[in-house]
Amino acid sequence: MVKPRPTIETIWGWLADVPDPEIPVISLVDLGIIRDVCWQDDDLVVTVTPTYSGCPATRIINLDIETALHKRGIASLRLERQLSPAWTTDWLSDAGRQKLEAYGIAPPQPAGGPKQCPRCQSPDVERISQFGSTPCKAQWRCTSCLEPFDYFKCI
Amino acid sequence: MSAALFEFLTRMGDNTLVLGHRVSEWCGIAPVLEEDIALANTALDLIGQTTLWLSLAGEVEGKGRDADALAFHRDVWDFRNLLITEQPNGDFGQTMMRQFLFDCWHVLYLDALRNSSDARIAAIAEKSLKEVTYHFERSAETVIGLGDGTEESHRRMQAALNRLWPFVGEMFDSDAVDQEMIAQGIAPDPQALRPAFDAKLTDVMAKATLAIPGDDFSHAGGRNGARHTEHLGHMLTQMQWLQRAYPDATW
Ligand SMILES: [Zn+2]
Image 1 (cartoon, helix red, strand yellow):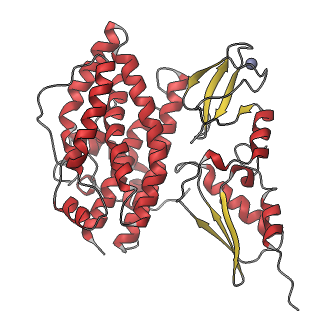
Image 2 (cartoon, rainbow over the protein chains, first blue to last red; image 1 turned 30 degrees about the vertical axis):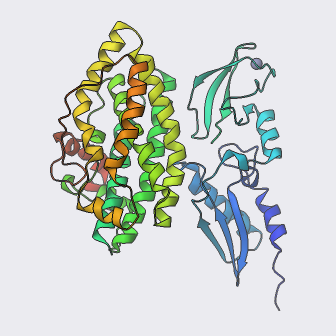
Image 3 (cartoon, chains in turn purple, cyan; image 1 turned 45 degrees about the horizontal axis):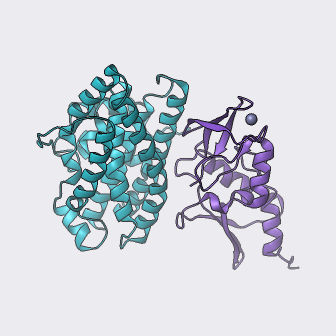
């Protein structure tokens, strides 16, 4: 008996439930790093692009994808890495941007700095450092409520 | 395999490996927490880029060596990094001056490599350039802030520039490997990047109120492995210690 294989849409839905290991409020799909999902004969091929070339979460992300799909019964899975086009924060989904802000991380802005403090919504913010606790973040501070916060770097 | 292509790829990977390791030496001891984090993140980007370059080098070589084998199982004379990357950290100012001079070259070189005839190289350059552009912004800003800072910070930044200046010329040297890369459309002519480098340098040094040394003597021997400075060997004893003591140990 041949079991019907899940559709590509179904698999995208499963991947949308896999959280980013460093910022678990957003999924790998929200982050925009899943570039393609397709069947090649009996293999499921998932193409992933790294956020930063040295991001230590990359291996965990691959492991999490494998675990999630194996759990759903995908037996033959191949993960492919795609470097070009390079990941950009433009690929963050709108839902992802909203979840980041609600979590206390200011989403990326083309202007290069946060639009407002994610806690009190004040536009009066200043940069503490161009880098932060993970490669994708920088440290900023609100000059109204004085709270420091993370800003998701725009690249 | 092409011997020149392998040589070119190890030059790229060894630059980011050696500088990445050097910068990581600050982890936990930088002047303030924010700078500590910034340096560690810069090092992380560079080590990530190293994995891309040296993996491709191993693949091109075809002898079964991966990025780890190339990073940990080679000795000083096999390294092809620019001499500037192996220079000791010195004080924070010297580290940031070294970073600025390297970033300034790195941005231009990667930008040109995006048009490489080898799609694998173009993809690594495209990825790396985004990270390195960010490094350049930070190192240029820091050099300006410290150069045009207090009397003490100005003095130290000028001393750092004077100390590192003889290592700048090597970035623009060109040899048979470069000629082959240029002929195949794989990489740009390093000499052709000098005017753009000088323009960026002049701009930043003017804002930093620092004087560019007039003497253009430059050391050579890193990118072709002929003669590294004494510092690289000492660095490798730290970086490669575990793999030398316990070959092929895994995590
Ligand atoms: Zn606030």
